[in-house]
Image (cartoon, rainbow, N blue to C red; front, side):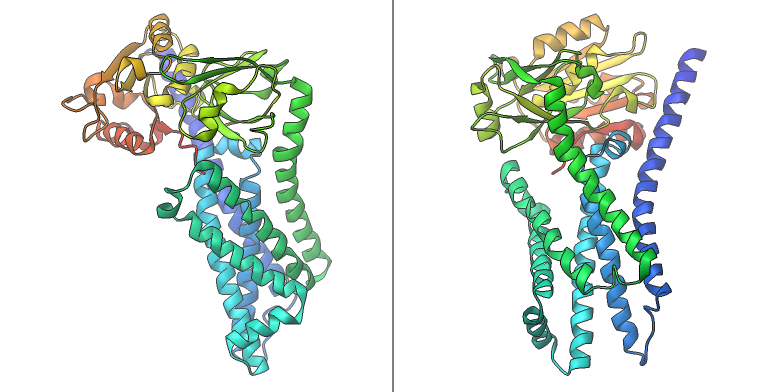
Length: 455
C-alpha cells in the first residue's frame, strides 16, 4: 500500500476502535446505573436487618432495582436514538437488547419470588397464599403480578425456536406486550416499591432515568417521524415491478440529505394508506440517497411485501432511521469484498455507487438464475464503472454458500481478502457460512460486516 493508503487504513481502524469502545461503554453504563440505584437503597438504610433472614428481603429489593434499570435500558435501546444506532450499530444494539432483556425478566422473577417468600414468612403464609393475598391487597400489586406474567410471555416468545415460526408482522404485534408490561409494573414501583422511597436524591435519580428512557422513545419513535413527514413531505413517487418479481419504489421528498443516510443503511418505512399504515418494515436503500429521493427494492416474501406493488404514487411515507453501520464508514482495511444473495443485493448496489476510487473491490453475487436475480444489470453496470471485479455464482443450492459443485472460496475469488473488509448481506444461514469462509481466509472478525435486521 502507498503511504496515503496506509494512513487511511490507520484512520479507519481508529474510528472502528472508538465505535467498539462506545458499544462496551453503553453496556457498562447500564450496569453502573443499576449499581448506583442499589447504592441509593443502601444509603437510605435498605440493608437494615433485625434477623439474618431480613438480608434476603433486602436482596429481593436490590434485585427489583436492577431489574428496573434493565427494563429502562430495554426502552432506551428500542428508541432508535441516533446516538445509539448510529455509533453502535443496529446489530450490536439488538444483541444488547436481547441479552439485557432476558436478564431483566430473570431478575424480575427472582425479585418477585424473594419478596413474596419473605413477606409470606413474616405473615405466616405459604408463597402461593401470599401471592394470592398480595393480588387482592391492592390494585398496584395486582398489576405488578400481571406485568411479570406478560414479561414471561415475551420471554417465551423470544426463544429462537419459537420466533423462527413467527412472521415479522406477528412478532412485532406481540412485542407490543412489552409496553403494556412496563406500564403495569410502574405503579407498584412508585406506590409500594423501594425505587422512589429513599429521599430526594433517589427520587430525582429515578425520575431522571425514566424521563431519559421514555423521552428518547417518544422523541425518536413518535415525534421525530411525524416532524420529518411534515418537513420533508415524503411520498411515493413511482412504483414498478421488476422482471424477477421484486417491487422497486422511489420515495420523493425535499431536503432528504438532512436525514444523514449513507449507502448500505436501512430505514423503517410506513406507507400511510388504508392497508399499510399500521406496520413499519425495514428495507435497505437500493441506491445512494439523494436530496430529493430515496429508493428501495423489495422482494415479495410475505403478505406485506407482496402487496407493495399495489401502493399508489402520492401515498405519504413515514420513515425512521437511517439505521445500521453497514456502510463504508465501518471499514477497517484497504479494499472491500461485497457479497450478496437474493434481495441482499440492494445495500451492495447502493455501496457500489459510493466506492472509493483506487481501492480493490470484488463483488460476489450468489444467484439461482439470472431471471430471478434482482438489480443484476445495475450491479453489472456499477461494477464496471467503479472498476470492481464482479463474480456471479449461479446455480442450485449446495451444502455451502456457493452453488452445488463449485469449489470457489473468498480466498480464490478475491486474493488478498485477509487485508480487506468483507460486507455480507443475504439469508441468515447463508451469510453465516460466508462469514465463516471469510474468517477461514484470515479476515479478522471485526472486518466482517453483516446486517441481520434483528427483531
